[in-house]
Image (tube, rainbow, N blue to C red; front, side, top):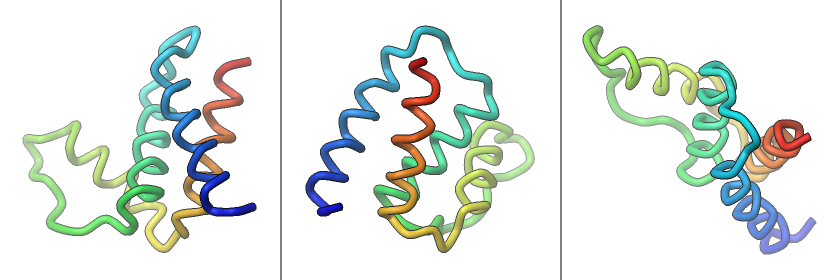
Length: 87
């Protein structure tokens, strides 16, 4: 798959994520966040947020859990997850 085709599908999935029939569970939202960040920014960097920032910490941990995943793979998994949520 060419990069531009994958990127177009990824961008369409990002747009679709904003109009899902129902709000996904927090676990799924964290997965989507991590795949999105990995696909667009690569591996997580910086310090893990402190104990008082529960949301930031959960997001950081979800993203750190898929460290080393290629951008293409993360985008592909994001597209798959969004399409499964639309059904």
